[in-house]
Image 1 (cartoon, rainbow, N blue to C red):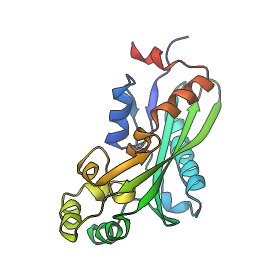
Image 2 (cartoon, rainbow, N blue to C red; image 1 turned 30 degrees about the vertical axis):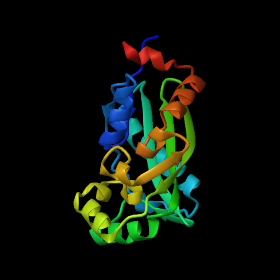
Image 3 (cartoon, helix red, strand yellow; image 1 turned 45 degrees about the vertical axis):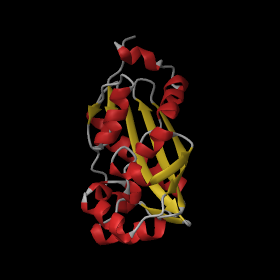
Image 4 (tube, rainbow, N blue to C red; image 1 turned 180 degrees about the horizontal axis):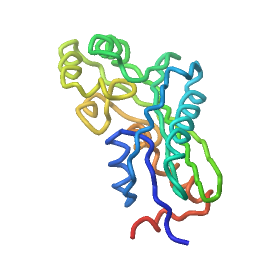
Length: 197
């Protein structure tokens, strides 16, 4: 049958690295989907819808491929946070988040073009943030890292210093739940180990 090409409909270097870590070398094709079109206040529904829209935007460019779309948001006190628009917003967010916890939702959409099937699922991980001084917050935002991440932090970067603990899937916080991906591949009749060629 042969292994179908695996397309990542995301420009996220972190998601690409996660896939490479488990032996999947993706074709990266950013979707450039306009996320402002989707206005949903429920985080799980929002990330699932956005993940599916991203995968579907990229799908017509490929034949017989597996196409993965993902989207992540952080929910703190019932408020949804995507990427901050600027440094001031990132600082304000951290002043609220520090010493509290948030729920990181990632939507996963996997299109199997050969089978004409689409799976859309989500994963949630609880993240506990450290108490931080204003100096630490400003210094962290000055690195630029929080401006590129949902929730204004990167677990795989400087942000790991300010995460006290997580409950749930670790890779989900980085942008793609690897255990969930394995289950989705199995549901579509694929074996993740086949990508290790």
